Length: 177
Image (cartoon, rainbow, N blue to C red; front, side, top):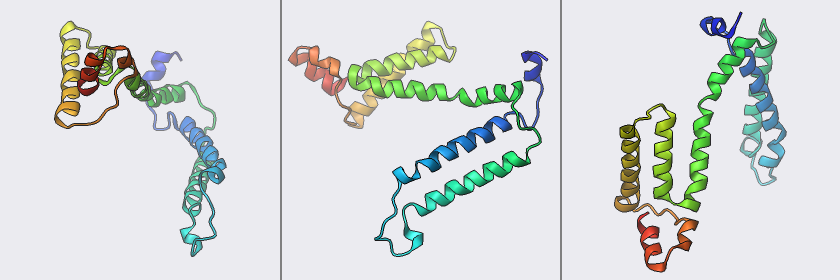
């Protein structure tokens, strides 16, 4: 059975093995870090007010749920269709990476330039590749910067690259761009 045939096959359980195993692994990692991320304090009045108690109960419950689910599954080894489904779940993570790169680039290159670059790049990435579509994206980015910095007065730190500009121009860039 090739990939095109696998994509046409629809089952209720596709991806289930990958999801359950991933859930088990993530829960075990979180549970292993509970001592570093929470504390057990002597100041707590009763056990219910301990900062570590409820996260521990939640993680142990998750672990038990994933373990029981895994145990009751008929098929415990992932097949090609499971990986196709897992890849579909991972696709939205691309936009998380886009956002993280944007957030890291704004303090270095500026809010206005990065907003225009990323709006145009994402528009192109989504398949809108005409000059008109990319131009609309650039205008949208400019409108958002004007809205946030001009009308709403959101204070966004100036970019490091602005330090290379002459003083009079740098002030304009820091305030408006």
